[in-house]
Length: 180
Image 1 (tube, rainbow, N blue to C red):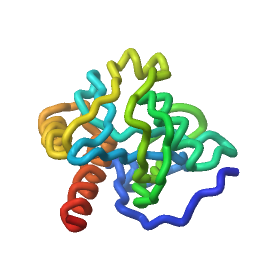
Image 2: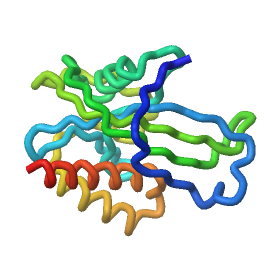
Image 3: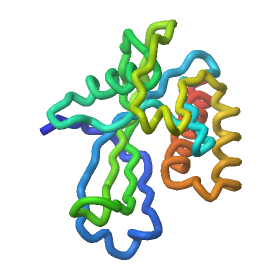
């Protein structure tokens, strides 16, 4: 079993298809990395969904949460030298699950600020990520938020993940503004 740190709950989102009855549900744990350089943030652009997301993904069974964060950053962005890991909080989602013996999944994303080495290396994206046109980009927070707002408003493909990313980007922007 993975040991999970105690972190504040930032937000909970429920997909409308599971609002009344979540049925047989399992919990999936993930990490999300917030890597800032001035006004720029390291994100993943996915052409299929036309959105920007924080690097991160599922925590493997028995994997330390910080190790998952480092692994996901390396795989998705080519980042190395992950350091100064600081917890932000947990974003929780309840979504339908369309395979196996479950009706829904509770996704708990553990979000962390961190620093990385200046240069990004080669990515190790999975086939589906490559097929979806995923690539790492540095972008201003404001550009990413504006883009994801448009995607939410205009795209029939936009779902809970874009809502999650917009919430987290807005929270990071708010915290940066109050810290200044």
